[in-house]
Length: 77
Image 1 (cartoon, one colour):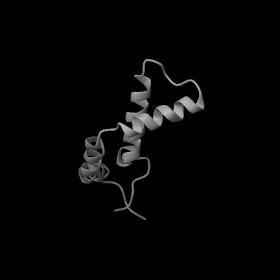
Image 2 (cartoon, helix red, strand yellow):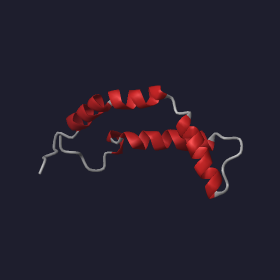
Image 3 (cartoon, rainbow, N blue to C red):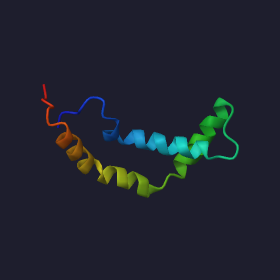
Image 4 (cartoon, rainbow, N blue to C red):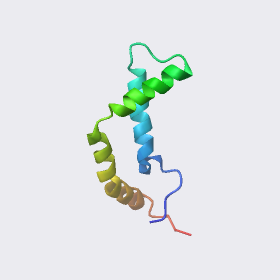
């Protein structure tokens, strides 16, 4: 499949970054330094539910199909 430009929903890592960003924002004490940010991200990454990753992987076919159906004018080059 030719990858559609400007389709962030097709890139699973975008959903992972969103998850991590929300988890960091929900912290009582947000990280202030680069070191604190790195440690906080590592903590959140380690506690990310495997179900989130599985869901993203399993949804790829559906999301790609939906995107292609909406973009009927898309002509691969």
